[in-house]
Image 1 (tube, rainbow, N blue to C red):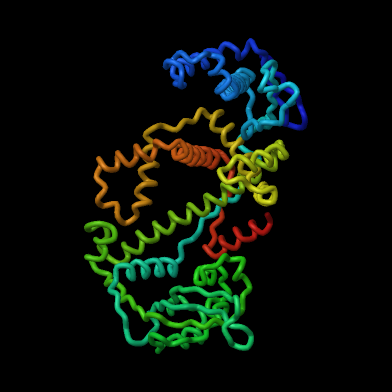
Image 2: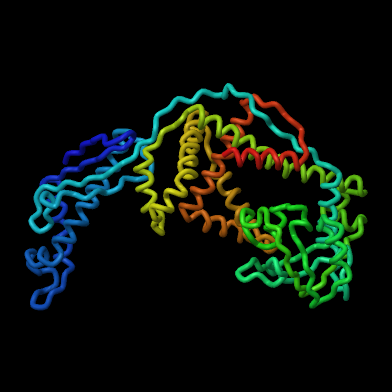
Length: 455
């Protein structure tokens, strides 16, 4: 057997595996004898079918199977011995039919295209000073959060007519310029909260309505052109409703109202446990801490993205793009078209470069992921799946669910990737220079949106 490499482009090579009869004959004949022992053929005693007949019937398929095993094992061994750092996996190439004659076996040649990972040096910490944002939790946000909790634990009713606290459920239908329902326009079955409407005139038009009524609403006016809010209301992508200025008919199916739960000790205990909170001021402080915790997740995501942008720019990693685009067309369960690959490759390329950088940091810092951490995260995933039905999950049941979840290799890989990503970011966050800037939540959203547009 002989394996050779040939460079065909940057980080792109061809592997050629050449086999002679000495490499495969013994294995093929051994497999033929196994078939002979178990083969039943009329006119012959079991296990006594002439080997020539066995070869005639099964010889070619056995040859193909054995050659595939030899080639596959040889490639794996070669990659390990040569310490090749591959991206994707080897892509089989058409072989020379004049050499690979399956009917009269002789010498065989198998060709594979491979993509290599770029080699790079990484200097940490980065020389750049980053901006780390701290979002101020304002009183209005706390009040809104408290009100949401009080509604969740409040009393539900269906009044005859609507008021300022009504939450409708009904159907939106987009109108054309003449006021008729627009053909092919946006329709959506959704809720509409009177209290959440920002425009006073629209809010007034929604009071005093009852089941079956239809009211005309301009959502852009009602929600002050908040595309995220409108997209959620219409169950549409943000880019589809951004800038929309149509009127909508809203036909009311139900008039709902929630009376907020009283701010008393029973309510406090229900939310945070017995006597953890004893008054409204303490309750608001607990809520403030929860919101601050959620904000930290948002600001960490922004800092992480900024660090990643800097590392990518500083390293300017090159990938074997042509190879990876070919590989992506066949690497997934449902093959992608060249058009799909072209559209998605930018994001894939960025992700792969970041994975290379992350893996380097993980190795250089001697990081590891313990089995206990993997099992703990699997448990978190399962609890999330069961959502509000987790009360009946005993320790015994949970242990069984975790074990079954981790039987799938892709589940383990997903958890390890998530935990590795967190470990590397926490390390980077601890070593980079960062200036902390305090901003409101709206200011932070504006900063993030401008950054996205810049990309």
